[in-house]
Length: 591
Image (tube, rainbow, N blue to C red):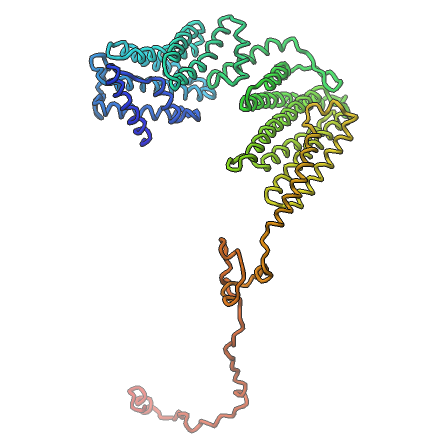
């Protein structure tokens, strides 16, 4: 809440300055909502947190302006009219009401994926947000408000109105509202400074996918190409991304009816599962999209999308395999040695998944290698380490090991040779980066041995690749690795020699490593670097045990051989006193 007050305090002087400079009320609508959204949850998609911020800010604004809705006992509704519009914070009050309703609608949209009934509440909140924005636009029509704020209010109203029509699937009305919003922001972009123009341009980029999607649903077939291109460039995030994926799936479903079989490794396999047909039809498009991706973030997103679709398809085929296994158990003609078509299709889909994993990790490794070389030239810059690349190549080798165990390909010797060749290539790269990690900690002998292992793997790849020319097309160049290892070996030897030469020549007295604590050799000087470290050897703790004299034990051995003198004369003799003695004894006279 302290941060909320700081933002409000920061914005208030700006608004007052606008009133004084331009002679009218002014409000940077788009700038205010963008800054508030980024600082209060929307950077991470947390709409609930942003809604809480809007509520708190509304309460503070009402308290500051003295515009409270009654008290804690009774509600008294008040409306903001043009007559009381003496401060730009009244406009901000209406804007925050619209933002609160909009953020609640977006929160319900996230929850509606699992609870469809919340869609009705979502539409109600969106309409409420549009109603507040229309109220803001009417207030801005006053002569007290400057022209820029009027245009921004119109664009904001058009945006929320378009969102309502978009959710209701009223494509034509939504397209008209979005086009109006886009036109206003484009005009504002060309009229103001570059700092504000960036905000307007970002808003235009957010609206463009919605306009194209509306055009496609109206009947413009050319819009699908624009949407696919925007998907490659990473546009259309958030709500639009889900719509775009659904549209692509719908287009593939129409084409899936014409697909009946697929051919792989010289065997034709019929495809009867609709989900598998849709996935295999879109496989080429997905691979082309990955190849055309403009940045690594978009490429990573496309890889994740492809892998998610592949896992869902494999799960659908696996369920069909379970039902097929039950049918085989019931039937008498059980063919145990032959791999069924469905099992071969499952192996094909698993092959696609594992190959995609290999390509994705290889792409990430290339990116990390480039960053590693950049940080190597700039020592002050902190970047990735060789251990990060080792982990990626471990995952690649694990995927290749699973490839060699696919059912139906055990007797395919060409396939097994290709997998073993790829394994050797990635083993060489993994070994190279392990050596790099040893170089960083100055373990020269271990690094040199690993470099020799890299050369051994690389030469083995070159000897085996003569019979498999087509297998090295998608693999990293081994020749470049050999050249790099040769250069690194010479650098390594030079660094090892320099490291030994630069070591200080200390006297034999100083070089002696003595584990004796400091308190025991205070009269003798020894150069011990551990004394200034975190664990100095000052005293031995706990101290060692030392022999000490124990308490003597005495045994009385003569007791059994001692003859004691008789004591019969001193022992009291009991006499026969009769009744008199008894009475004396009772009263104590005889004692």
